[in-house]
Structures are given as C-alpha cells and as structure tokens.
Image 1 (tube, rainbow, N blue to C red):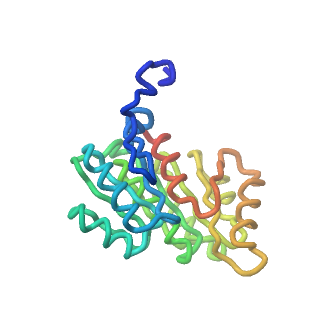
Image 2: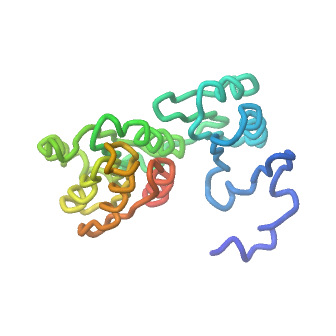
Length: 232
C-alpha cells in the first residue's frame, strides 16, 4: 500500500524547522529508518544540530562521509556517538534494535584493499540497519583463486554487494558464479584511464552477467540500503 494515499502523509509536524535544514522525522514511517545525514557541504555545527534533532525523537542517528572534526561536534551533544573511521560514518544508537534475518546475511566483497572505505561504508550502514554482514575483502580478478576459495561463504548469503575500482570486472565474475542478487559499487580507485571510477561504472553497467544492478561511484551507503531492503 502506498503511504501517499494516507492523509497523514503530509502533516505539518512531519519535519522540524532548524532554519538551515528541515529534518524529516516522518521518514522512519515511510522508509523504515530515520533520515540519514550526508555531511559534506555542512558545517560541524549544522551536522551536530541535525543529529541532535533526530536523536531527540528517539531515533538512531547515521551520518555519512564524516570527518573527525564533525564527530567531535556531534559527540559534545550526543555522548553515545561512535565514529567508524574507515567507513567515515558516525552512528548513535538510541534504542536496542534487534538483528533482522540472522540467517540471511549480506556479503560485502571487495576487489582490493583500496576499496575498503566504500565497502566499510556499506558494511556499517547495513549493520546499523540491523543486518548481519559477511566481509570478504581483497578477492579481485588479479588473484581469482582468492574469490573461488570464498564462494561457499558467499553462497550462504542472501544478497551480495561487490565493490571494485580499476576496470570493475569483479561484479561480472561474481555474477556468473552465484544465484544471488548482486549490487555493484564502482569505486574511484585506479590510475588515470579509470577516470575516477567511470571505467568501473561503465564495465558494471555493461555486465553480461544477469542479476547485477549498479549504484553510483563510491556509493556504499546506497548499496547497503538496497541490500537491506532485499534482505528484509
């Protein structure tokens, strides 16, 4: 059923006016999780105020692409704030959230170690949303035997996120070996002709392996949300 049909969908008190931002407190009812803060372009003080507004409603806080300066500002008002340095994410748990689908895990695979920041953004996001994550890192096509050895572990998961830069071939390879939905994440890792992730993006979009969907360059967060919806 579409929430748009409900008269309560656009009530005046569905968001909080902060002057520089309108915090969408109704989002949890539409999406199943609260508004997420994208930090670039915002001052540390702005992020801290938005985070405090979300937490005041009793909702969990997730802020992506955060640096330590932003974390310091958030930590002043939200003492339980935690900084995940590799993922560049700030989380605040306001209530105990049970883990969903303990038996149905999300596999997150990387081609190389340089892809870890994007992969960890996906992993921390998925875990924050209540899902179990299986991390399988550094199994790219330059050493394909590493992937083969981990296939049983991958096949035990319900949905797979493949994170790869350079030419982005790993998503196609995985897509040809398993029967799970795959969300491919191109990263901006690579030398000049990778065009900051464009090469990997085009490779993934042109994959001949069925069942491979693609999100934007470096968008680990977006991949994690899609995977969480599939897993849920």
